Length: 209
Image 1 (cartoon, one colour):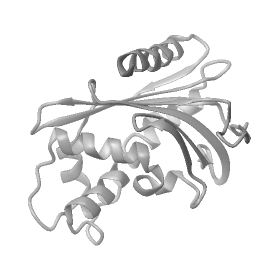
Image 2 (tube, helix red, strand yellow; image 1 turned 90 degrees about the vertical axis):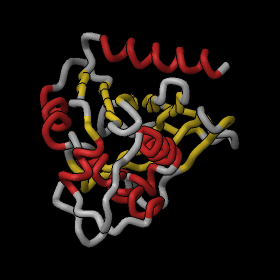
Image 3 (cartoon, one colour; image 1 turned 120 degrees about the vertical axis):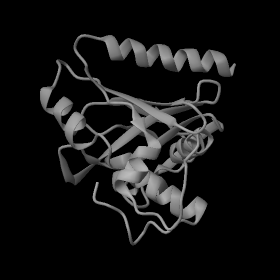
């Protein structure tokens, strides 16, 4: 069952990734230890492992409001699930190009432990178990994100792809993510993870992202 779900999620992502009308962005691979050295001055020496990076991505998938608080309106996140690796997350998120406004985002999330990948697939609507009907906000296109952990245990590499479901390729969105959002969410997640899970002093010494 899990392998079939993984195939279904990956097939939907790849279908939308290759659709001519959509707006895909493939981010450069991130060497996570190099990212830590670039952005933080830690209280002690640390080599982040591949297992640590995967642990962070799983925690982030289930608790985006904790690990990426800049992308979630406080108190807005709800999760609906039938199993731990396959669930729906609903939250109010800042509009990409105007972070003073929020829009409701509905995402189907799958945690693929075999491939060490997390897929977030945007969807336009859902019905909650209580019968409440929810619609995604219309202030920006639906979007999918794929996070994949590769590399070795001592040199983990994070790969990330994102595609917006647009009527035609949107150069403004592509530029925004390729330039302005390339590292910011991961830097924030790393800071919180290193502080909360490893007790490292990052709060007073982060280097500007």
